Image (tube, rainbow, N blue to C red; front, side, top):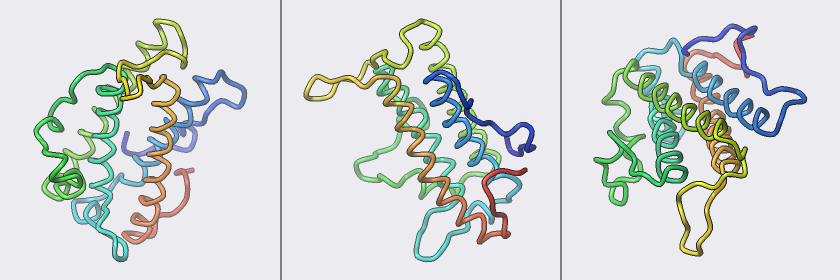
Length: 183
């Protein structure tokens, strides 16, 4: 998704189940990020605001990593796949932000869309198996706790909400686009 019409804008249900509300909130954040990064060329995706080095392209790449790592590591207990598995995160924690300028806009958007699609598929499979949001992920903390699906999804909502705020400021500085949805 790169552009959205107002009638297609995802809204969480007003009186849905807990899972529908959480997933609806996450989809709204994903759609806002897609909209805030749509229609821009490489220069637009490389723009920064003030002293920050955060770019819209960097946000796409970072959130693609967050999507993949949350579900691979926390839910499935599996290693994160390419390209994330080749990064020395301890020595280069800002790799996704730093290297985004080397990627084309199409590559960044594809990377993010594919990561979000993988996340959606994992969640759909988990919810179809029953157990709702209380199901526990495979990751085990040092104290023996495991995150439930609710916590993983809410962490994603929080991550997107914070970064969509950054995207608002950056996009406005690029071409004046403001607002919360294209409607």
